[in-house]
Image 1 (cartoon, rainbow, N blue to C red):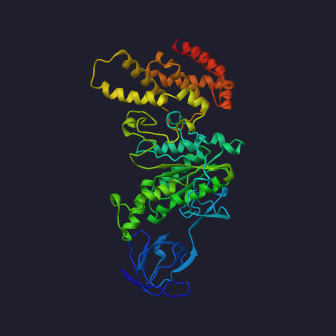
Image 2 (image 1 turned 30 degrees about the vertical axis):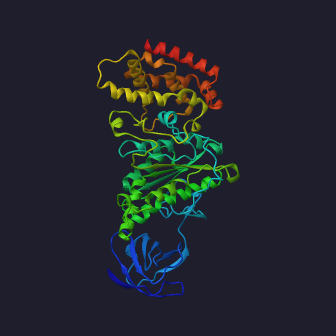
Amino acid sequence: PISVQAALASADCWPRRECGWLPCGTGKLFFCRPSCPPAGPLPGHPAGGKVKDLYKPDNVGVVMFGNDKLIKEGDTVKRTGAIVDVPVGEELLGRVVDALGNAIDGKGPFGSKTHRRVGLKAPGIIPRISVQEPTQTGIKALNSLVPIGHDQHELIGNGQTGKISISIDTIINQKRFNDGSDEKKKLYCIYVVIGQKRSTVAQLVKRLTDADAMKYTIVVSAMALDAAPLQELAPYTGCSMGEYFRDNGKYALIIYDDLSKQAVAYHQMFLLLCQLPGHEAYPGDMFYQHSRLLERAAKMNNAFGGGSLTALPVIETQASDIFLEAELFYKGVHPAINVGLSVSRVGSAAQTRAMKQVAGTMKLELAQYCEVTAFAQFSSDLDAATQQLLSCDVCLTELLKQRQHTLMAIEEQVAVIHVNVRDYLEKLEPSKITKFENAFLSHVVSRHQALLGTIRADGKISEESDAKLKEIVTNFLAGFEA
């Protein structure tokens, strides 16, 4: 290492010692010193950079949040007495910021006067309330099989299986609620991009802008060219921005894309700082760091404002709540949700009553179908009941397919899934189901808005609505087959 001198400029400077600078390309500094200052406050650099210190008995390792090229021999490094905070508030909606909350979209400063620390503790048990409200994704397979509630944090499966499409579609689907006047239905979104290319971030922002979704969205970007400390910090920055809405009685959704890359950045930092590795060479507290982050997603009770923060972390793991399977994806099943491996933490508590009525047994049916399909590959003689199960569930799988960015309101999803519940799909060939669904949905939306409005307002399918749906499906199916 290059020998440098940390000059003693004032009483709050660190003691004058010989210091080492290790140019490893990750924003890392290394200072030797006789004793540790109190944990928490960040040291600062004259160039305006912020740094994070990691203490050892006889020295302190420091990582820099910013451009380490501005550091040179003989610079003064002083304790600032400050802990990293970021700007928060509605002024950030529609903007793209870096891991320190600085605007990087070329639109100038956003003028937020409110700041919030990035490393706040998750709410305890008393301020929380159980999950009772659904987060509408606009995707019928999710809303019916693996419902997501306000406060719930879900892990979304393996790479290259369409998980980013689910995340973006969930944000775009909130436009129907955010354009309304009911503040309790609005959902403000934060999308945290970690370790992605600039072109990927630009495509994401363009997609959200074209869908008129950026006006209620904040994009926090720590790109692949950014230093590892910034990639490690970005999720906490986005979480603090989401907590602002939660603690002010509003609803927020945060998507971490993806925490696997944040773990790699954290892993890189700690190995270069000579910390002891743990499981799979990751730092020993890696899993604690992720659980600490996700537990900040919470639904608060009325005494604490009644707001919520819902987290959707994208991470490559077999322990997924929503597990997307590559084999299904390549077979053309989109979204490629593996029903057997995917679980919901709260189940039907995060569904509307109407969705419970039509989707109550769907997950069991699809799980049985997957089991029987594997068995059927080795047997040529199947009884009538098994053949009937295979036929019905092939139709159901076709019905649950949904193209990217083709989103549906909850009442439209209920109407479509109702067709399967009443066994009308048995009369159709699987290859015609997608065509039937599109035609039926267009028919219902154009001619039966009153029925859809009733289901949306009541939140359930009454006997009258059920009878009306039966009549509509029967008449439409007769004309469709003809």
